[in-house]
Image (cartoon, rainbow over all chains, first blue to last red; front, side, top):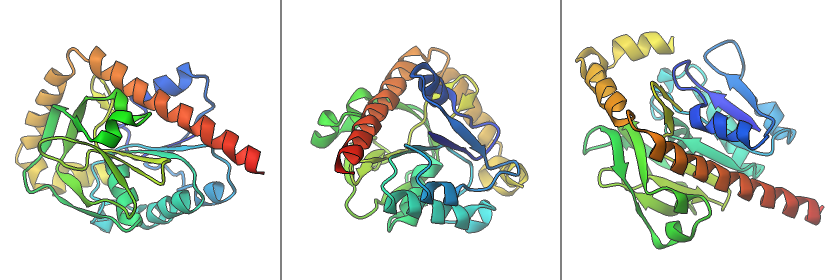
Length: 184
Length: 61
């Protein structure tokens, strides 16, 4: 399994702990160092799934991420090759930008702290989204238009597109898990 | 590069809002067990789905 980490202070956190406890073999690519976006590895089918972590970068401002274009290519490859993905916060936004969605600044302002989620009918039955009714938020942008064919699973008062799934295997999750001081 | 941009170039960072938000985040996570449990269950639900997807791919192959 692959974890894409964008910045030092947004590490795997709960995701990493859960994967380790499940006995998963995990490769963490640290994009803030000198590691490259592993497009070829995804094309070769080397990963069972991908976890994309958060970042302070802005998905609709390519200059805010030196790997923006490579990551867009990566997200398109993940979708085209049907590699299951769990895309958190910035990664949700980047996946959306890469796959026909749209990201904007949230007109209602920044969403910070724990917020309740309202699950849709699909979300209440979903094997992933049904587990979460409250999530930690720290973002000022939002997915204004989900990728084509996405199913909305949960919303918060400030952000409609909180959790969605694309093609049944790509989970877009705006909120994060967290260990104190270390969002993921 | 990212850290420099994050600290210096964003209006909300310059305004001190980031520091306020960090306080909110710390307070919000002071009792974080509920968040840890539910988020971990979401990840485990996803891993189950990945396992099912892989089994289906192998069967089709």
